[in-house]
Length: 376
Length: 259
View 1: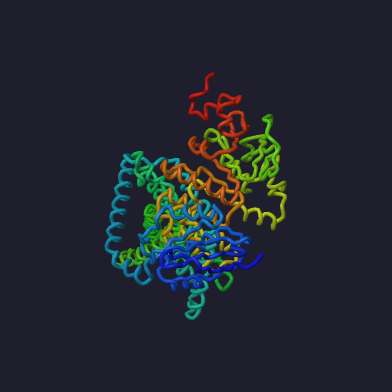
View 2: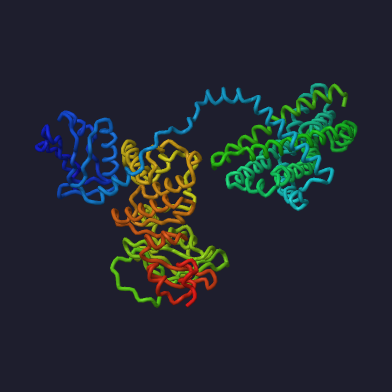
């Protein structure tokens, strides 16, 4: 098929009837190349045109491409009061063209997507608001927890246990791997340094106290924020997208009671246990390294028994409680604040993990300072 | 089926003994129907009878448990990769909620099939997108995200994306659900206009009686209880002459049921 071309016929163009006839030839489909719109801009030379008549030649084929082109022409002539006469084209072209022009184009602009810098500035400006929102959420969660503990709340045990199952046992493999490796890393670090003083046996103190007070709780929490916190944000975010949360609210059920509380309680129950598990495996991992060098298992374990106090263990457990609440808060808050699109669910998930990790680190530092001054 | 139909030349879609299952759960069995070129074929039936499932079988998302669906004599599931690609290019599908990609603007949504299947330049694609959006009454909404427009507009944008490539067969899943009567009417007109001007075949799942009679030239009624088709034919014929009371009731909102 021939390439699409335009033939101008200005014979009918007079001062009384300003009119130019344009004959379309050839292949006006998606597969072809269309003439540039500039060719038509020459029409302006013929003075005050009022009508451009389009006529199809014999060898002429078309699809949506032609209409897209005609619409583009129309936009080009928008400023002049020029009319398009399509009666010389197949009837369907005329119909479709009219159909496409039934609804006048929308002039309103969509909400601007802000630039990166601008959005950062906005975020800083919104920090105050966000702090207030966080405070409100914390307060509401605290009240909800209080109601539950005083037996007025309504979280169902079946929900709580199913969330426990999701967050606890199924996280064991990754916690195992990670704790053993962290223990080994601590032991290597300690061995190299302590050997300089001939105090290799004190590697037990380093690994034991390090795991129990710090690494066990922190590492379990980091894993859980990535695994479970993100999952909570995605679950609640998707519910937000599907209007399930609106449905709950209209049913008179508080999302806080029904969605956030069981998740929070589940994390409060599982994370301390995972922390203990992590402590034990971390010490075992440290022992593997220590015994591969100069220390025997007996020495390692004996020294470990002396190094760790009950207070150390409780410190770690207490931290893991705090971390559990923070992870649940970060995950659920991100989920509930999620927008109404699938992209927003992704953002909520990212948000949940990032804020959870920030909370964890800040809380950990704060607690350490507190424990130091309290002499715990 | 038992219904006598004049022999027609260009059958576009043909179902032969089609049986659909989810796992072991039977949805519909032993469906037989033919859809000819240029027809508007309406899939009707009560809620939960498998109308959308039938549509999803037609567009190759689910594989039939038994029997087959032929497109011009060719089954999608026995076709080669290239043939499948070619068949999909000739289909346009609109989904119940529009199924727009929420991280893309309307223009990007409509441009996607054009970028995928054609070699048009960016400017040409922009013109094309503008035209398709204008056709569904959404000119000027190019830079909006789906979350910034209403549900009805999302549906129309979904239609703009479905017709981006001038498909031979247009599939609609509940096109007018959730639209106001005027928009629904305009959508019906648009469907008919597209059918007339491009010669496309239209397959439509709908409950809207007004739409069924306004645009349907052929149809099938699926029954949830017997799990098979009760009747096929044009909606008007089914309303007046169907042997099944259920079909007449359905098409008259229960008024012509008892005789």
